Amino acid sequence: MNALATQTNTALRPAGGFDLSPQTFEQALTFSQYLADSDMVPKDFKGKPGNCLIAMQWGSELGLKPLQSLQNLAVINGRPALWGDAVIALVLSSPACEYVTEDDDGHTAYCRVKRKGAPEQVRTFSIDDARAAGLSGKQGPWTQYPKRMRQMRARAFALRDVFPDVLRGMPVAEELQDMEASNAAGAGEKHMGPAEVVPQQLPEWPADRWAAGLPKWLKGIADGKPLDEVLAWLRSKGAVTPAQEQQLRAEAARQQAPAPAAPAAPAATGAPTVDAEQLAQRMQACTDTEALYELGNLMDAVTDPEQNRRLGEIFDAKLAELEAA
Image (cartoon, rainbow, N blue to C red; front, side, top):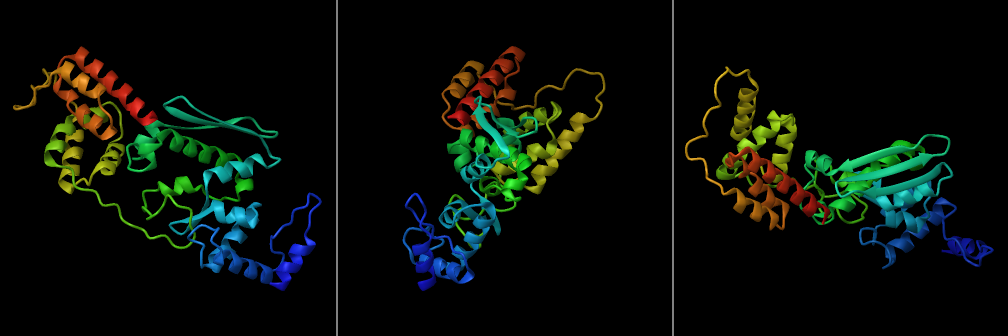
C-alpha cells in the first residue's frame, strides 16, 4: 500500500492527473489485489488477483494501461485475445498506420488499410464466406447482427496481416469465438481464466427434410460447390448421420460420372407438386433464414426453367435482406 501510495503521490502529471500504473513487481501485486477487490472490474476478474496481474502484463506489452487491459483482453479456449475495437484503436494510434476505412455493401464487408510507405491493402468478408464457414444463420450474433460480424472478420484479416508488429501476433477475440474446434460457454463475455468448452449438440437431420433438400444440395455440387463445404453447412444446421453422408457422397459421385447420351430420367415417383406462385409469396413473406432455406428446398419440385430461375432470384434477394437486417 505504502509503495503504491508513494507512486501515486509522486506521479502527478502537468495536466493535473496521475497514473496508477505499477512500476515494480510488488506494486503490481498490490494493485492487482485492489482491482480484484473492486466492484468496478469485469466479473471474471473479481476476486482473482492472479488474473488481473496477467492481464495487466499482456496489456503492457501491447501498450495498454492496466484498466484498459482488463476491459479489452479476453481468454477464449485458453488463448489470450483482443476485442476488435481495441485492435483498431491500437493500430490507429500507431505511427505506422496512415488510415483504416471500413464499409459494407449489404453483401460484403470491406476493410481498407494503409501502412506508411506501403500500398493500400484490402480484406473482405462476404455472406458467401460466412455461409461457407458455417456461420450464416448460426444462433447468436451471426443471426442478430450479421453486418457487424462481417465487419469484425474483415477488420481482423486486414489488421493482423498488415500490422502484426503493432498487435504482437495477438489474435482477435471475435474470430476465436467462431472457431469450430470449440464452443465456449459465455463466449460473448470478456473474461480471463480457462473457459468451459461445451460440445455443440445438434439434432440429427430428419429423414423427410434430408430427402427434400438432397436434390438442391446435389445441384449445388454439380454447379461447382465443393462437397466438403456443403457438408460443413449441413453440419452447422444439424447432425449428419454416417448413412446420410454416404448417400450424399454416392449421389454426388454418380452425377459427376459421364452419362450416356439419353434423355434425362423422369422425376422420382411421388415427388411433391409445388405451386410456383404460392412458393414465391411464401418466400417473400419469410422472416427468418431457417424457414427460408426450408422453402428453398422445394424449388427443385418446380420443373419450369423460367419459374425456377425466378424463384432462385427471389430466394437470393430475401436471404440478403434477412442477413443484412
